[in-house]
Amino acid sequence: MFHFALKVLAFILISTRLIGQEIDYQLRASFHDQTIDTVHGNPFGESIIFVNELKFYIYTTHNGQTNPDCALLLSLKNPKQTMSTVRPFQIFFGVDSLLNYKGIHEGALDPINNMYWTWQTGYIHCKLEGYILNHTTKQNFEYHIGGFPLKDKRPLWIGQKSDCKSLELNFDLHPAIEWALENKVFNIMSPGKISDEMVRVLEKGIKII
Amino acid sequence: MRSALTLSFLLLVIWSFKYTDTYKSNFPQHFPNPKSERITNLDSLEVELGRILFFDAQFSADQLVSCASCHSPYHSFAHVDHRLSHGAFDSIGRRNVPALFNLAWQEVFMHDGAAHNLQAQSLAPLTSITEMAATLDQVQGILKTDLLYRDLFQKVFGTEPSIPRALEALEAFQLSLISAESKYDKMLIGIETFSDQELHGLEVFSENCASCHPPPLFSTYGFASNGLPIDSNIFDLGRYEQTGNNSDSMQFKVPSLRNLKYTNPYMHDGRFNNLRQVLNHYSPRNGIMDKSPLVIPISEDDKSDLIAFLKTLNDSNFIFNPSHQFPKWTLTINTIQNEN
Image 1 (cartoon, helix red, strand yellow):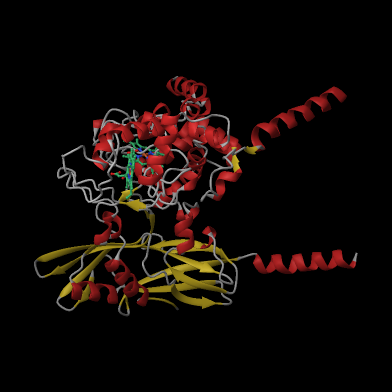
Image 2 (spheres, rainbow over the protein chains, first blue to last red; image 1 turned 90 degrees about the horizontal axis):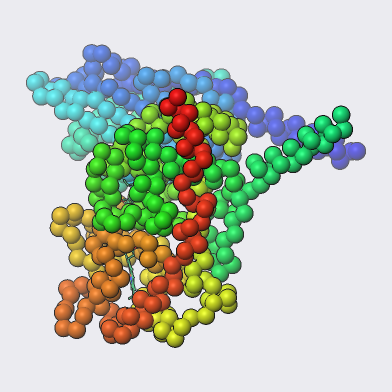
C-alpha cells in the first residue's frame, strides 16, 4: 500500500514537472537598435536594406531532451506564437540535428510550411530575403540556411529560462547584412561551408530580452 | 441480448485483427540487422494506406503520374525501357529509376545519396518538376478533401490527413518491400541447389564483384566508382554533387544486384541494356581496351557463368506478390466516387 502511494506521489510529481506551461514567444526583428522597418527600409551606410521575409525555427530543450512539439516557426508575418514549454528550458536557433535526421514531423515542422528542402533532405533553419538599395542599384539577397548535414553540429544556443510567461526574442539582422556585404554573398540556397558561416553570424544577432 | 454481446465481441476481435495486428515483417534470418527500426513494427493498415498513396496518380500536377508510374511492381519497382525517368507533362528526368526493395537496409537514398531519410525522400518526387510536379499545398488539399483518405487516416492514425503522416505511410509501404526469395536465398537455406555453372558463377562473383556487391543484399549501399566515363550530355558527377569533395566525383550508390532480370536498363543513367554490356564494361573484350580505371579480367566463359549466377538473384515471388500491386479495389472505386 505504502509502495503504491509512493508511486502515485512520484507519478504526480514527475507529471506536474513534465507538463509544459503555455508561453508566449514574440519576435522583434531589428536592425541595430531600431525595430525593423519593412515599409521604408533600414538605413545602412549609403544603402537602405529592405527585408521581405524572415522566417526561422527555434526549439527548446528540457534536461537536454527535445521533441517535435518543442519547435516553433517564427516569422515577420507570424511574430507571436504560443507553445507549451516544460521549465526550466534552453532555447536554440534552427532545428535540432536529431530531429532533422529523424524524418518529417507535424506541427511547426510540417513541410507544408515550405521550410524543407526536397532535393537535399533537411529542414531549412532560417529564410532571410530582401534587397539592398544603393542610390540607383538594387541588389537582391536570398538566404536559405540549414539542411542536412550542417558540418559542425554544435547546437546554436540562444539562452535559457527557468520561469516566465512570455518571452521576447530580438533578432538583429545587422551582423548578417554586414557579413553579406563584406563577403559579397547574396545567395545561399544549399547547405555547405558558406551556409555554415552564415548561420554563425545569424546566431550572433539573436537574443532573449 | 447474449447473442448481441457475442456478436459485438466477435466484431471487436475481427476489428482488432484487422486494424491492430502489426505487420509481420518476415525478414529473413540470413539478412543482417536492418537499419530501419520501423521494419519490425509495421502496422498492416498503414502499409495498405502507403500502397494506395504510392499508386494514386491524383497527386501529380497532370493527374497522370504516380510513384508507381516510374516504380512499377512488375519491374521490381524500377522503370523499364527508357534510360531516364519520365514524369508529369512528358518531362524527362536526369537519372535512371532505381529499383525499390530491401530499403530497410539502406541509410541513404538516391544515386548520389541526396536523401538521408526514406520519409523525406518522397518529398522530392512529389514536388520535382520532372517527376510529379505538384505543390505540397495541392497534395495536402487532396488528402484533406478525399473521403477515402479522410477515412483511412482516421483509422490508421486517428487524425486528419496530413503530409507528415502521408510520408510516414509511404515509408511503411516501401519498407515492406522485401526481396529475399530468390533461388540464391533458397539455396542458402537448403531448399534448392545450384547447377555447376551457377556454382562456378558464384566463385567468379565472389572473387571479382563481392567487394562492392556483397551478399546477401548484394550491395554495400555505400558509394563507389565502377569506372564509368562521364556522359558529357548529362554531366552527372554523382556523390560529388552532394558533398563537393573531389574524391567523390563519379561515385554512385552501389545498387543491389537482385532482380536484374526486371530492372534494365542499368547504371545511374541507364546506359547499358543487358548484362553482357555491363560485363563488357567491367571486363573489356579481348583487345579492346577501355579507358576505365576499374578493369576486371574475366574470360568469356566465366562471363557466361557469372550471368547464370546473377540470374539466381531474381525473385519472382517478390515481383508477383499481390500485396505489391495496384490496389484495384480501393483506387478504382474511389475514382468512380470522385467523378460522381
